[in-house]
Length: 330
Image (cartoon, rainbow, N blue to C red):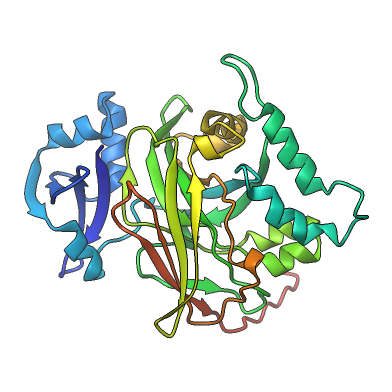
């Protein structure tokens, strides 16, 4: 299964590599970014892998060595970050209702189902429709534009006003909109969606606020179909010591929605089908350290790993300094 990796060499020049499931990568000639390769593939009406083969493959690249040296970048970016939209869906996994329900149950009578549980049960009933039928729409949220994406080893910068800085181990789909306004999936990335769960717990209607945070992507984009059953591990280290570790499950076998249903409900909006735009869409999780009572501290390091991805998602949390905002008439 081909995977694409964006790198910077020791002189700071951009490079794009393609690698298979094992072994070294090869430099893709003639382009330096995945976005450029995607545009070439669209123009020639071929797959990313075929477009790379037509351009030619150059020198071998030791992807793991480049990763450890800090030269691997996030696998996707846009020349204009405003034209990369980052979004996501929640309550899509078979265990995802439990943690969310705990967060919101205190606000309602115990004998009453929370909105979270109702949304989860709707997904169980209608998130995997028969072919040709429309499925139930999931919870949806906006995270930001391309400027919020952190690559391997980059800090996840939490705003000064944040009440929490919690990891969310997830798979993200990556898409480009073609000249006819149709979404074309480039592939999948391992990621950390990163949210403020204390703010969300305070009031369910603050979910939108809690999601306006950075997100991290692993160093590779996996082209082709996503395996139905992915099993990974999410970890937190503090001063080099492991303080929390838990397995997580993802992929359609562990979800209440088909990926196609999540994609359909995102791209049904015309504003998300603007030619040339990129989309990174997170598919949700059922595993949070916050649900286990962990409070993340400044400097803690997240690590998320899941085969068939070869590279982990590894980032530290840093809290930004307060920023003064002065709104006045022009």
